[in-house]
Length: 452
Image 1 (cartoon, rainbow, N blue to C red):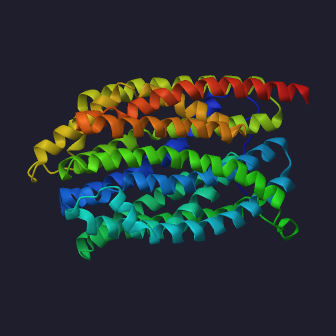
Image 2 (cartoon, one colour):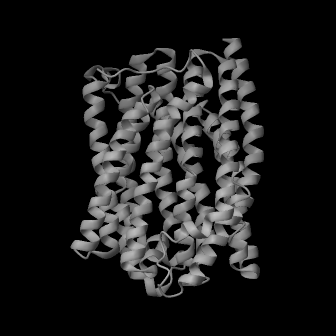
Image 3 (cartoon, helix red, strand yellow):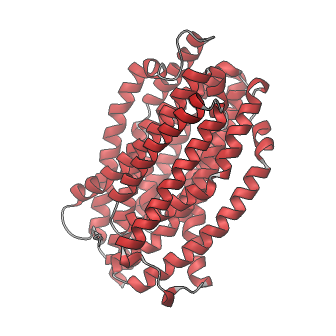
């Protein structure tokens, strides 16, 4: 029988770091197989195929981000009930989350597959890569239930203190993804469709493994017959947590979609450069997500346990670690971004010099502002972990507005130079809001705990 782990006692920073390490490794593994996926596509199928895979990365982030946000939100009441020791109530929330997730899988998958072609047209996908982009995106959308399955179950495991097991299953999934990539693309000549099929197949395996393990090793999470009743009250609580978190991811991605559409309109060279740079950006952002997720679970458990001082210290120490990492990785991107992009672009390919120069410029410009992500992610997820998702969503709205403004107003004038500063504008403005609202929420939670 596996052990649950509460973070309501003991040293704070070591607990957060210990909890975040499996999350970080899991994120890195997930990005590594995306990284290798892009390497195989770019080097075997060429820059145009890489552009086709990356042409819809923003809409993938929108849809898959909505799924991930929903699952993270559904786990907030689980973490809070676990921290308070209310296990029967926790299991009732888990059961209702299963029902809502199944319904969400049907609705989201159906809507996205039907709208696939329209989405690519809205993104101004270049005509020479449109067919491949459609094949890739359609298959990714068909795999949405796999994404929901893994993220819901892994979020429940993390809510009770187990961040290691989801990482192990993700590692297995990553190895499988690489093997399937090579098999589908090189052996069976399936092109970009093979890359997409490999991705959703491996994601489904990790979800199934989580389900088997959780059922056998975590009795505290096992949904028994006595709690298998749908409750509108609990459903509303779950949706009140999940929808704002999902929308926050999606709203952020809307700005990214506008930005990508503006970038795609600049031509295939910049589409390919953006695709390569995005893989590196996503990889280097993994520690921000891991630290912030650990702080979110930490804050939720300590809120349930009624310990406001630990909440304050946990958020402060997590934010400092995140910002420190941002400074270090930002320096690396400034000086070595172009060299890192060579992993995806064969230097002998057509237009390789221009593509690599554009990717390097984009990453270098990002590097100067990476520190802000440490503060932004930690404060935003802490607010969510404390149950104030409706306030955290405004942070996503700010990011969307900032990216959209730069993309619509400055890209037509300054072209790719404006693309290179769209993200940073969004990060800094959202960071200011998130830090202020985090202080407000912590003070409000503190008063609530003391009053009770």
